[in-house]
Length: 169
Image (cartoon, rainbow, N blue to C red; front, top):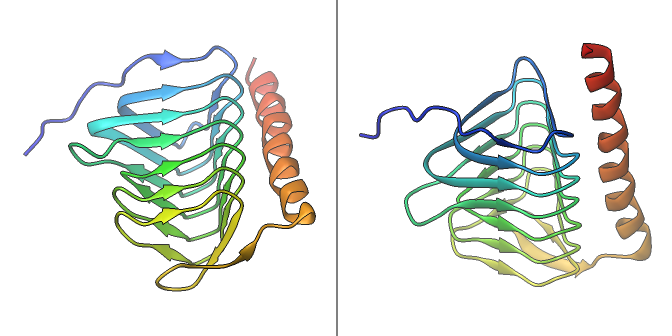
């Protein structure tokens, strides 16, 4: 059993963490990243890295296992209640509400994992894919509209986090 690890202070000055979020262990938060209410980032057994402009929404859980760090690249949205466990999510992607991405999985750049989908351990999702179902399968390429939605989600959460951060001062 691993003992609790103190919070690692690797936070960019422009990131924002909601007061009710839990961030502990080996966690790095990039510029303009945000962690929302009730989210849990537990880097107690390996590292968690959140890229610039990414957001981890309310009640999402990010965790890892030895040998399976959790990597969230730039401008990624992790939806409400989603679980990303020991996986790698490449930039400009969206993990939908209550989706689950398991150890060793890799979500390619510009992809969407739809709400409620399950990406199994070790599954590699090609860039620009729309994943749906349990187990998750690529159902089509993302469209220009999908890409616009991903970009809008990231921008919205950057702006919203800046507003919350300003209200705290």
